[in-house]
Length: 238
Image (cartoon, helix red, strand yellow):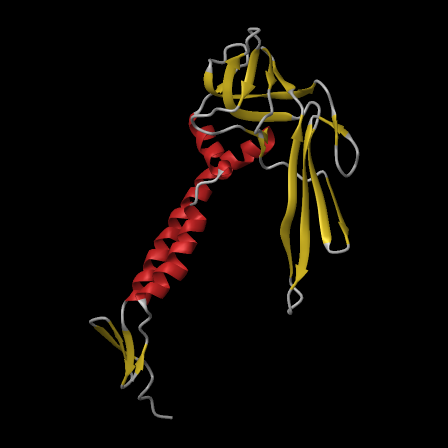
């Protein structure tokens, strides 16, 4: 008799929970796109104070110089990764260092413009502008450029000088910027992403039930809980 039972603790704590945690863990990116789904995009002239979503072209005030290519830009992400190779020759990348640098800038649409205060601004889904490999390191930069069409979620407010500004929303803890094209692509794929999530969750439950149900192989019979199946073709004569 061969027992196919698996310890509950092993399955739940080392397989199911970590996998579910990876899928359903809350991230800034998920929060951004969840809010983007429900918030209307406000024109800059009519944006209400508080949590808001705006879009338009990024306009430079004072440039910063990118780390690798030394280009003038509004802001950038600079990423350094370690390159590691396993015994099978597969290459993996591990983050060693990352920084986001951004100066204040304007976002302008057809109705007006608003100044963005970039403290804690998170760049989301930006395409790499340049990448190079030196030794065991990979260096990548992502640029926020002049006239790039972007979408932001944060807080519309007013400074002490009555200047309208856009900044981090503290209650929802959200302040993100993404290329408008990327947001459009994400919205097109959103139904498919949701369906895939439900599909994966369903099969995790099915697999968990199978693994948690005692199974035995005895006398050409598979015993699965209270159900028995005879293995086919065992009595077929040659």
